[in-house]
Length: 537
Image (cartoon, rainbow, N blue to C red):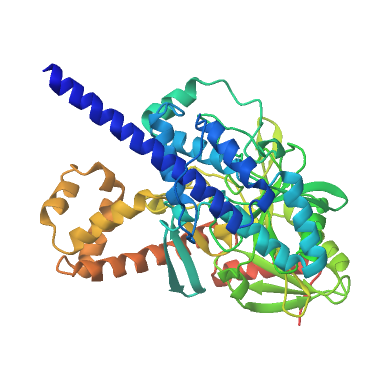
């Protein structure tokens, strides 16, 4: 028995020694990777190695030969180091949350300081132009594993033809889920005081905690918009090409004003290759973070941008500006013009009119009386970009957050019959035609495909209430079986389900549309355009 114990201890010691050797080698390989990707310079090699040795409590580096290699990213090396970090007690649990905290700490030690990143960005912009500067900045953020392309690659994506053009559909699998124990532990922590939210500038270099992500590898670029201090960064879980976030210097709440529109126009003046937009500023139709003023942008052409206009209008009040009603399931007015100052006035006047505009014939009410106070319901989702000829395009998406007994989550919100697919707010990205659907759908759609391809036991489990995860889909499953039967090949069923989900997304956007795509609805939208002083060409 004692011999067995000694052997087991010896094996454990050997395994630990092997892990340590692999980690020390990974440190050398990570330094090599950082040098190749220009995260560090030649004279930073010893400094960077020593900072990593310090983190892993090692007195000496790896002394073996390091093969020359070109890695696509740092993830392989990070996994080796984090595995060793767990064994060495640097993190208490080997969960995604704790691994991510150590991941950011490691990469924060192989990155240039914020001021160096800013100086490099500004120098590149001046010498080679803003498009090259953003291209290099997004590469740095990816190489530093701040943009988690390894996880973004897990998302499901497809394009879906609809009556309004080709929509883009994603099932979001990139953000790591917390374990029940982590969720419970996070609830016991005091409310965050510093940083106040995940958008605050104080996140740069922050070590993170159980209920707040680590940001040692975050870098941001200062901007001036409308004469005010703002910052520019990329999203760690990008939904589209060069998905950026532009956020206010201070922790101030979102509020749409004429200054908001000035900032958006100023941004595309400085970044003509990017679009930028803002979520609406009211609950239900707004974004997920209303406590910190911010925008989202990037280098991507969304389905909405490709959608044509049904009718064009003009107004002598706004010379050179055209207004088009866009062929889209939501209510979108597109302003175009070469002069951003005139465009600003046209967009703001539309917004100010809309905030107080009601069309009782169509059930559109700008305000409700609650306990003697007037509660506003109308707002907009604004989106700005430059066209190929340098002109400005300003999409004003009309929103209303009123609720009713029939639709307590929101009249212009995904209706309950769609909640089995999506029940969250329709925000800026989805307004533009890119669906962000919950990760649960991957497994649920796979199960439904099994039913459509003959899994009778699973079908019975659904009908008898023994498959709770599929209970919200029960009515839909019955409809699918009525249309397609249960003798499909699995691959056929998967194609059909993608088509069905994509069509439902277009229908969900229709739910969010204030003026419906009916003759009556479009006549009402034209009445609003006329009330704004525009006449049809």
